[in-house]
Image (cartoon, rainbow, N blue to C red):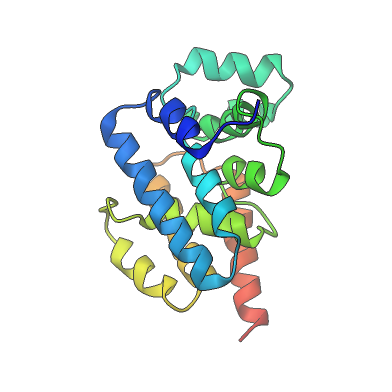
Length: 192
């Protein structure tokens, strides 16, 4: 079954608290804006943004069950549970909502961690999640300023912020996030 945009919005918004839905709306708006700015497909950006947190408020037991029973990235189980919803969200977007576009699915899958060689759409959705208007954390205004001229600089700053936060709390850092950050730095160096 092919869901309309309105049906997807209804299905996703019903699975989360109002505050998280306001965040999702901010990500939608920001992703579309960034897509226009950087020449990406704004419909795909909107679709990935609608679905990026579809599994965010599922019970941890259910997230783990979906990861294990469907042979998804089980390395995630060794890392923070905050990462799980992205992988499960991509799975659910495909299985339950009929999304077949791998670019959209990967934008959902990597919106929390990033990865090496992120596509334009993946960068946009990940960055939109960091800097949507409702976000308020130290450094977010700098990320927004950087986004005006460089997607890679802004996203690298966002990943730096995440890594610094985790270091300050003595938490484990998901290796893919470090690799994604380093890859963005290499891209910036190559283009300078």
